[in-house]
Image (cartoon, rainbow, N blue to C red; front, top):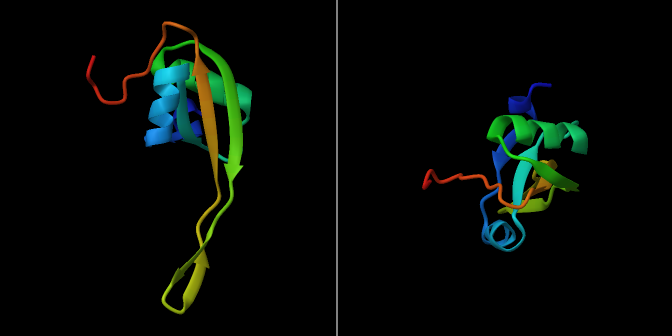
Length: 95
């Protein structure tokens, strides 16, 4: 897989913003078949930063209900990437 297929989107929530500010960690939705090594290399290539650590987890789908109909949301893989001190990723185009 090429790096653009591995990294699907960044997760921009309040919790991820706290991780970014406190621990220099960034959260991404990644391809389900990607492993930690592939994810780390993809982040380094796409954003031009040095990756220290990658943690992954599979987020299970939740049961949802709309009226009398029930369904399930999709499963996806989340990666929390710790960057080398001094490196950062600018999602908002401020720098």
